[in-house]
Structures are given as structure tokens and as C-alpha cells.
Amino acid sequence: MNNRRSTFLTILNSAICGYFLIRLFFFIDLNSRTVQIDVIQGILIGFGLAFVTAQIYARIKATKINGWITMFGLGVPGNGMFLRAAHAQLFPGPVNVPEEAMYWTTSGDGAGHLLSGEHNYVIHFPPDGLPPNHAFWSLTMGNPKNRFVENPINRYSISDRTGLTPNVDSSVDIYIQNTAPAGHESNWLPSPPGNFILWLRVYMPDTAILNGEYKVPPIVKTK
Amino acid sequence: MIPNMRHLFIFSGVCLSTWFLFTYLWPRLLFIVYKRAILVKGSGDGPIPINTLYTEPQTLFADPLHPPASASKLFTTGVNRDTLPTVGWLDLSKEPQVLHMPDMGSRYYSVQFTDPSKNINFAYVGKRTTGNSSGDYLITGPGWKGAIPQDMERISSPNNSVLVLGRVFVENEGDIPAAYHLAAQIQLTPWGHSNPTGKQ
Image (cartoon, rainbow over all chains, first blue to last red; front, side, top):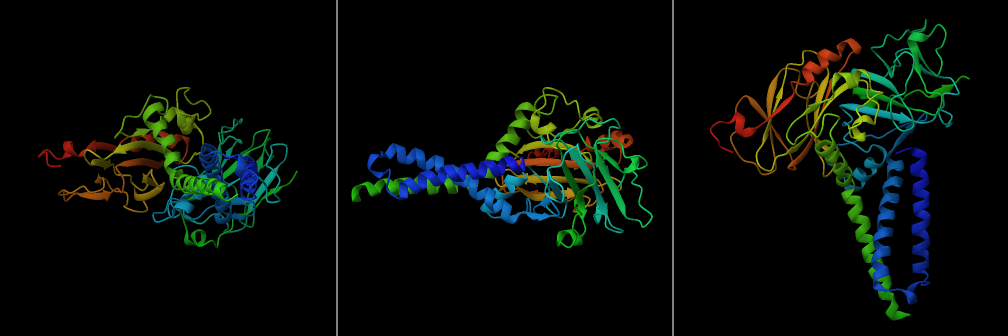
């Protein structure tokens, strides 16, 4: 689910549940109630609260660095029921355990503004700063509905195998923009004209990622 | 005031139980959607029968912007250009299933076994966990007892329902046929076929 939409739903839900709970606990409703209303309200508010608590717990458990969101411990046997519900909020699917793959996603740049094809962005990996792994990594473009984005060079993702050109100091810049960056076509990840999201995947991540030492660089707006 | 307090107790009881129940059932409800997507809608070539595996066609991987209209939305949502997915839903209540893995050379791949009631991955076959040589794996449901052939490794599932998700690495466009050729060799057969003595 889109992050902003789920924030909105969480707040709306809390407000509605809160309203009914306050009425109830200040005895405003008590004299005009029937058992039927108790049960129906109980189920609806119980469901609302389940959503709200899972969302809040997901946000507590999520790791947010430089605008990127990830969660450790996805799909690990032994996760408790509250953690499993929290995981299902941000990563609703059969995703890998951390040792197999780590996922980061973002719909905003490092400064917290929504990513949009109206702007140009760079993600700068310092020398030896590409995601350490024992399989591969990739940076994939999606529209806000999490689908592929049409582009003139049919490049839907950029990765350790798309032929990135390093800078002279062996750092790597990836250009995320709607039109081709002159002279940097090999490091171009085409964005749509409108909003977009990004996925960073690292398969068989190194211990530096698993223990949280490695920090994904922010996406920096350049224009 | 006092007699009406019972409304408070009834409401609180129902509310708390619902809250607890939904939190507990959340992954299970999520995976009902996946189960339906696999067994009812499929990925464009119709439903994927239970206890079989289906690999995403090469044409769809090469041109992900135009998925078949009949495909479940779940299969066409989510941007992945790294691995060719192979999916299936298992029912182990009658008999175990045998997973046949081809020799994957040095290629990255993994096959994930997910318990849909909890969304946890209880086992993996893959480069990281079992290595890349060919082999057969016996996937058994809870409580299954029997002799396991020497050349098979056993994967014990805590649940009779299992979501199987394979991922075979695709190096680039030109590598799609090779990756598909390998992924399509990941196959399931019922235990009865591999065990002609009929012992279950």
C-alpha cells in the first residue's frame, strides 16, 4: 500500500475508533444501547484497532534511513503474531528472509519530498559503496501503483549488470530522470513524467547489510 | 447507571477478541488473496493447478508493460527485473510432493517455501542454502511418517498448504531463454509416482 494513503487511513481509523470509544467510556451511549449494537460496534472497532495497531507497530519496526524504508526479519520463522501483522502492512507478500534478500523502497527523496519526473535526481554511491552482496543488487523503477514504467530505452531497472560507468574516483552516480542525461546514458534510470517509487534489492546481502552497518545513500534532487 | 454497564463489558469483550483475532489472522487473510490468484486466476495461461509449478513466460518477462489481460493483478503488480518467478500452491494433506531441481550451474536461484497461515518461510532450496547441483526434495506435511529415499532430502512443512516461490536469476535480455529453460525444469511430482511401492 502507498505510504501516504496508509498514513491517512491509519489516522482516519484512529479518529473514528477514538470517537466511539470516548463516547462509550464517558457513558454517553450507555443508556440508549442494545446488545446488538455492542456486538456490531465491537467487531467494527476491533477491526479498526487491529489495522491501526499493526500500522503503528510496522512504523516502529521499520528502519528508515535517508528516506529509504526497509524491515529486518521479514518471513523469519519464530516471528510473533504482532510482528507478522506489522510485516504484512509494509511488505504484503511472500518476500524473502533477510539472508536471502533485503528490500528497500521509497516514494520520496532524501529530503522527504515525493519523487517526481518533473525533477532530476542522483543517487551517489561512494567508492566501494555499492550494496555489498554475494549474489546481485538492483535499483528498479515503478509508478505509484508499483508497475513498470514505459521508457524509450526499455530500461526498467539499473543494476550491477547493466554496465554502470564509475566516476574517476570509482564512486558511482545513478541519474534518475525523465530525459536522458547527456554523457551519462549508461547510468540513467528513466523515470515517468509523474510520481514514481524505487525499489532497491540486494540478494544474498553481506553481513554489513544484515547488521545494519551499510547505509543506502539518499536520492538527491539536482534540478 | 449500574445495570447498563453490561454494555461496556459486552462491547469491550467483542472489541478485544476481534482485535486479537484480526491481528492473528492478518497474514492468513493476505494469503487467501495469493491462493486465489494462483489457483483461480493464474498468470495469463489460466489457473495454475494445485501441486504444479508455473514459470512466468519469456515474452512477459521481456515485455512487462503488456501483461495478458486474463492474468491476476497480483502477478503483474510489483516491479522485478532480476529473477524469473516460478509459483505454485501445494496441498500436502493427501501425500507428500517431490520437488525436482535441475543443475543450476553457477547461477543464483532460490525456491522459497512459505507457510500461508503465518507468512513465514520455513525452508529454502537454493544457491545460498542447498547449493546448485541437481537433486530431489521430499516435501511433507505435518505428521507425515515414512521412509525417505537416500537420494532425497526432506523438507517438513508445518502446514498442509504451502506457497512455493522460485526465483531464477536473469543476467540480461539475452539470458532470458537460458533462465527460463532452467526455471521450467523445476518440477513437482506426487510422492506416489516416485514411490512405486505405493507406501505412503
